Amino acid sequence: MTKQQWRKTWFQVHQWIGLGLAILIIPLSLSGAALVWDEGLDRLIHPSRFAVSGEQVLNPAAYEAAARVSLGREDRIVSIAKLEAGPVLVVASPPAKPGAAPRRGPPQRTSVYLDPPTARVLGVASNGSGPIRFLHVLHGSLFVPGWGRTIVGLIGIAMMLSSFTGLWLWWPIVGKAARGLRWKRHRNTDTNLHYQTGFWIALPLFVLSLTGAWISFPTLFGGGAPRGRPPMAEPLRQTGLGVDRAAQRAGGWNKITWPTTKSADWSVELPGKRSVKVADDTGALAVVAQTEQRRGITGLMRRIHDGTGMGWLWQVIIFVGGLLPALLAVTGVIMWVRARTWRADLARRQATQA
Image (cartoon, rainbow, N blue to C red; front, side):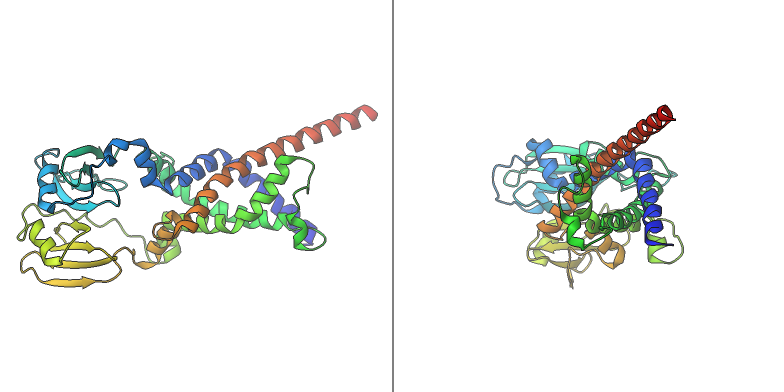
């Protein structure tokens, strides 16, 4: 194929990906942009949960006791954590129901927000509802039961192709690449916006689309046969040490995670991104390195995709990478409508002259 034929082919691919998926790309990209700073958004929506009276911290057992007042009798504490410049967060899990079907999505959790100096309850929330949960479900599955995650993954693959074809079409036909950076490549503002924003966001958008598709299809990209979700570990109802003794053995705490049916150790995150495990039966310590890192290639893909622990610069790029696809979808549709109108007018003029 000649260069012009390739350009025509890639134009058709790029155009129909944009037109066919615009209605899905817009909510998917905007929800992704909002979730970059989901904690800040939660503070904005629910300020009362973060209205603390000070930074003085009590023993963790005081928070455990205060949280249990707001929890169900059978609920089990999963973890207690100090949020930076905010409340102490106690997360609990309801008991598994015998014979219940496996739950799709994240496990059900209840969060209790406590004032650090007083252990007063500031708020109680379920992870199954609320604006942040709405955004997570929208971004992860478009609210389509069963097939939603697959659809989102396929959109990610399509967006990778769109990023590649868009960059190909941006490249000037003649002259140096710098010619493509001119603002007035076209007389219409929307077309210039499409060219320029598309160029600058092409590589980040390709990366975000790749990581999003990887998260949706981990076995496809990571290799190996598909495996079912392993049974969820449940926090132990009765522990040997107790949360205060576990914190004392660890020498402090930022977050304490309860022993479970799979691991009979307390996991204690300490200042400085360090972590130790405390055996519930003997109190023996074991150091764990790099507590905040999610291991494995899928964990890396998640961090790149959501910006967790990647620094403010990458988070800003992700945020812009969520806003601009919506702009590209809108300007692309405008360009397509204008082109159709122009061709229809041309056909009428030619018919009149014939």
